[in-house]
Length: 263
Image (cartoon, rainbow, N blue to C red; front, side, top):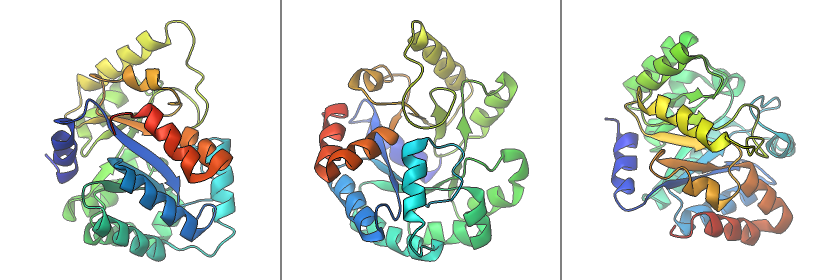
């Protein structure tokens, strides 16, 4: 079991489900994003998924796309990002920060270097959604050499054999997209949707040795409660960003507390 999986297992002894929030680095400014991450960590979130912005974030919906484009109006670079994250991982040892970004900026930085630096700053997991596992041999080798977990994504339309393969190879945790489409508003609220998500997660659990995180479209407490016993981590992304956009940090924290009242 990896260090990240052990962290999740230990945390789960005291909580029915863990929280992971999403923040775009550099939005609306670099310092404001770092202040927001610090507030979330001070609040006691278990994970913060910090996105290094990219101009074409294909897995993301309008809110996160707009945040990425705004962030990229500044002069941001991966090394500064990692240095900033290292300060936060040092200051908040009871939570974990994982990197989320796309292949282009990470490849330009160097995947070997990325894994090495992640280990140096105690960032235990990397999420690169547009890097398929079939083309990831060097990346996986670099992660393994530095004891970093490459976190893979599956969706409800992932073919059964591929889903089973990704679930069996997952370490750290497996990121399970709760519905088809991009991040943002849920479109799986129709009749029978809960049963379909339950079946999907049950299929994953039958093949996964790693913990399970579920995201995309989570906006209400009842959705998170429905995941208890079926997943280990509930991931709050666009809903938190929308609250932040509407009312700043206090609005974001109000939403967080309503969704994770025992945080």
